[in-house]
Length: 365
Length: 245
Image (cartoon, rainbow over the protein chains, first blue to last red):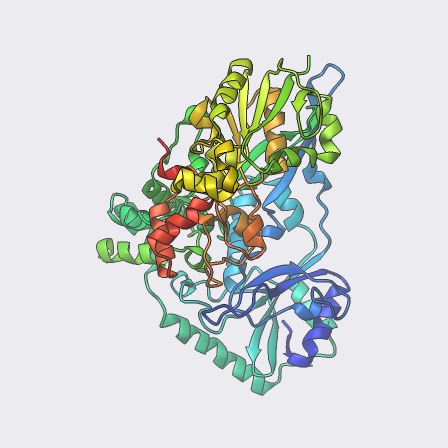
């Protein structure tokens, strides 16, 4: 596989080269500098034209974390699934499945962090293994180039990728950019990535000094994140099973606002609601789906007003068990990447990391 | 047979009736499905043979209660539209002041000419079948309600708080900006309009059914807001919750 050096001044031409074949999607600034000194970023499609605020120059490759992960480009917050209309007899006879009409442009997702790559692999599992979701697949199987950026240190106080072992991933992307002084080491991780690096002839190969530096950076990454391990991820499913009736659920859920923010910013949450909308004359309509969240009370409410999880603590326990136990039983892996978005979004400091650690302290021996 | 519909206005700015007129692109289609027999902001017709009554505004004069009861007797369905009708809205602030002083403040020397009462939302006077929230109500939620009533199903109105819509829109949380917001306890459906523009939610759509106001009050406390200030902030649109049965 090819390795090259992408100097800072070559980033614009690198993105322009990608923009000739792809719609480039990258993190852009979404806020002013906030009181805590940080800023917020968001993945956005960028215009290929020069200069303007939504152009390629707005891309930020050194950033802590994006508000939402790139899930939204494959599984939008709201989408139409079917369109239907009344036939001659007045019945809603014919429905048109819209999955066949989904045709996104070729897309280059630039700037994904390892946790986002890991999350995308988990969504692929859900939407593409034991059940095939045609809407997700139509977007995911389009022409796609995934350019990841290495994390050198934890991006926030809330992130716990160190414990989840998702601070580095070695598959699921095409190119990896790793900060090396005045530029990035660009390493290929797939055939497609390799082809791109070979095509970018203006980039110098990674010389021996920089190769050595890159090895050092990778071992520093290992050391930095090893120091941040707060719990044993492998023991999470077992501890959750033992802690099913633990008071931690009530203790944490008491202050839960039931606002659903944790669900909505989670890169591995994929639950949705499905409903129909008709026009005012009820002659035609559409079936839609929108993101939903298991922390919202309405999520488990069924006809007649019955609710499987009416209590906050039942909902919190369910959510954390989905991440650390139920889906582990189904897919053999944890459905959490430790990005910490849920904990950052939570105004009352509820974090899976705290719960995993608490249960480990109480049941982990 | 098209259902006959009437719009009634009580104490309010009539902004919700205006919202109906703002359904411009769909207004003619709507008239293909319903017959409007009373709508003072748009028509001189004044008939009383309606089946569905949309009520805007709250009761705040002695004869309002009688008028509302008469509407209830005639209509099969009563829909409260907008914050004033649903919960008293801004009008309800009057109830936290001395009635006579408020009256004098508003009408000055002519105060005695204008009898006034404590403000009551529609549901405090008559049975309400459906509510359309907001100040003003949103066009989409009004249309959703009309469409649902026409086909006989329950309108799909969000039960979850504003945070859901903020997160979908990738708004930067106002708390992270050092500001405050009532969004975590207020019913969504506005597409997080105010937070999206950088202004904290003032709660015009009322408390979300599963709110945790006690917990949000603690959060607001960390941002320097005393419980008394939280209560006052809520009184802008939600004074009714302090006395609601």
